Length: 325
Image 1 (spheres, rainbow, N blue to C red):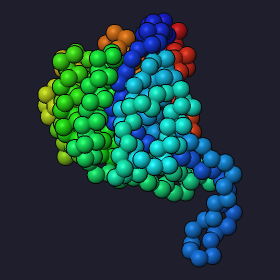
Image 2: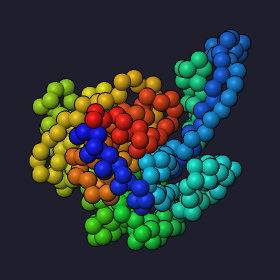
Image 3: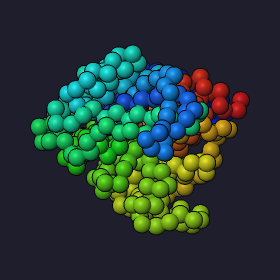
Image 4: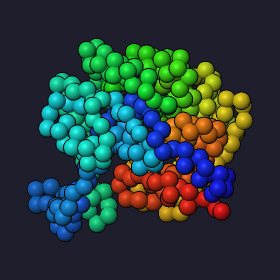
């Protein structure tokens, strides 16, 4: 794909309405210096210099969609706590609606706090509960998602295994999306893997693909076997296996396999790269691109965000400029 073709598809991203269903969270980054060891334990003492907050998980997918010109509608669960207020404030700062966030008083708002000293992550602290949501919360999620399905052109399902995506939520929403012929892009976790159907594209990384098939990828033949098996398990969707520095491999529904080399020149932080992939895929499919072209665009977008520190997004201009004329 050259820049002209990429630009045509990217231009069609603007205003595309995308439902984002999944585990929303807040990513906190605390930056400082570690100049001494604590006297009470052999751990560094980090002197805090600055803090940053970013939307994480499904919320970061939405932030990526917005940065690329789309209109995301987020459905997810928060606690009924101070963390919810902070998360909603970050939604507002990012110019995103938080109307689809269902409060659950039985759990905290998911917050991941990373402490970074001298550009090195020292520790991560997670505030979360991962058990499935109650039937009452489940009903609220389904009602909200089904209402929004009438307004959107594609769906992203972002599973971080935090309890939002129960089998009932997946079965109901994916079934309705299929009946409306909406493209669905799904970023998976192992727990719910067999519930991920019907979908248009599923994006396991190579570790997830290995784990779900109980096979090790050590060669191209291994990769081909694993990709075909994932397709068989899920009734033949398009499978985009993300492979880090090896790029991506697309197993298309028609049996074709396309290996897409990585485009990142420098990798600073892979946090949220999968969110960028599914966001770009969904926008491209909503814009009428083929799955192959959508995968190429998502590969370029991911190559840009891994060159940025922390949870990051990219723009259509950056993606276009990453292609040769």
